[in-house]
Image 1 (cartoon, rainbow, N blue to C red):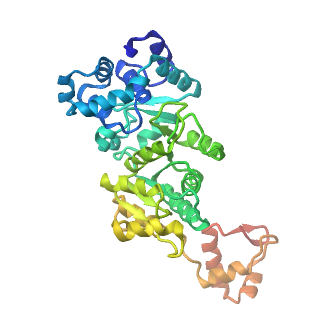
Image 2: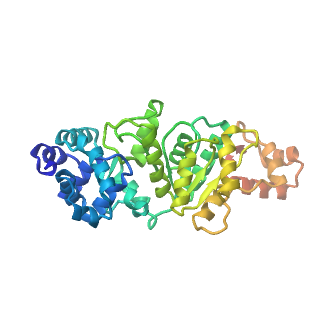
Image 3: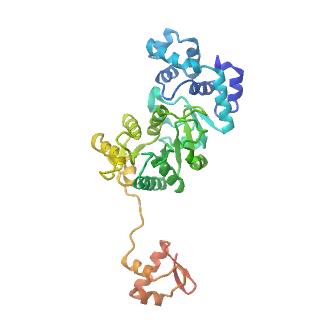
Length: 390
C-alpha cells in the first residue's frame, strides 16, 4: 500500500502539515485524483482518507460501494481514472517538490481550514497546498472575517481594472479579505489593490502552488505569498489546464462570502464562477458597464437573467455580506471657503494669513476656519512664516 511505503513517508515528513496517516493519505489523494472528483469525495467522507485509499488500491468491494452511496458503474470508472496514479513514486515526487518550494499541506480539521469549503460536499477539496501564510487561509473562514471574491475578464478594459481596484481597496480598508485567481486583468487588479491597501488577499490557482501562471505575475505571486497565500488543490508541479481552471472556480466561489463579477464576456469562464456562487447560495453581484462593451455583456446577462445584484461601489458588496445598507466613508467634498483658501496657497513658499485673505477674498475669520479644516484633512500644513500646501 502506498501509505506504508517508506519512501513516501520519508518525503512527506519534510512537508509541514503532512504529519499523520490521515494527512498523508490526503496528500496521496491530491496526487491521485483531479480536482472535484465526487466519487473520491464520497468515499473519503464515508471511510476517512486512509481507509478510502486502502479500498481504492484493493479494488473496492461491493459493501464499501454501498456504504459510500455509489453505484458499481461510477466506481469502476473512478478506478480506471485513479489506477495510473496509484503510484508511490508520484506521491514521493510531489512531497519532495513541496518541501523544496516551502509549501504547506492543509486538510479538513486543521485550525486554519476554512469551513465554508465543506459546502461543496463530495466535491470539496481533499487537501490544499499553500504557499505563503497558512493562517491567511484560515482567516477566510466565515466565522472569522468577511471575504469577497472579485473576478472578471483577463482581457479587461481600463474601466474594469479601475473598478476592480477601487472595490478591492475600499473593501480591504473595511477589513474584507479579497479572493481571486491571480490571472491577468480583473484578478490582478483586485489582488494589487488589496495589497496596496494593506489588506488580506488569497489567490486560488489552477496549477501547482509552486508555479507562477501567468509568468508575467511572478512579482505579484511573491507579494501575495508574503502578505497572504497562494492556494491550490493540485499537487506541486501540476500544469494548469482549462478543466482545472473551471474546477478551481468552485473554490473561489466557496471561499468568498459574496462573489462580484466586474467584467465578463458572453462566454467568459468567469460566468462559471458566478454559477458556482449561485449554486452554493452565495450572494452574487455584477458591475454594469457600457451596453456597447462586449466585456460587460456577461455582467449584463447576470443582472438580467440570474438575479445578480447591481454593484456600483464597495457599500453594495458590504450589504451583500450582511453589513446592512452602508456607504463606504469617503472624504467630504471641500467647502467653497476651503477651495478658495487652497487656491490661495502654494506648495513652495509659505504665505501669511493676511496674504491668504487678500488672495482668497475671504474674511480673516472664515479663512482661519478653512485653514484649520484643511490642516485636519492633511491638505495644508503650518510652516515658518505661514501656511503651505501639503
